[in-house]
Image (tube, rainbow, N blue to C red; front, side, top):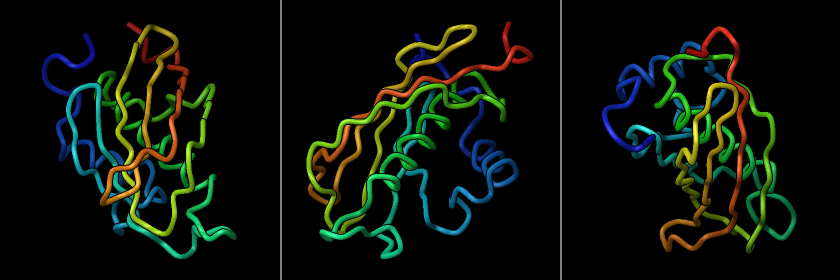
Length: 148
């Protein structure tokens, strides 16, 4: 269902939307990279940044959650279009192992996009080995004005 067809916003339109609506996310300055993108799914890469390191040392949990959350937003917008006020209603994360000091990738897909709520699944992987470090389930609320 959500994976079929063309995305609601093509790649260039998505990147322009992100730059306009969420410039602090980091897509414009290399802190986040939209590595893969299609309807209902995306891969967002977060290059290693020493500012995200916690004692251990490892990339911090909040940085991993932010990567999963913004990836979920991108995946959802690929289905519903440019709806800036689609917001996180719930985010559940299971940390599976330390992320270490490496680049991370988040593979996210839309599980279901309803009229009011959408649910996404995301896996955060340590690169280049692609070892899974976290699994997230994210629910977004879709604003009334965006509903069919």
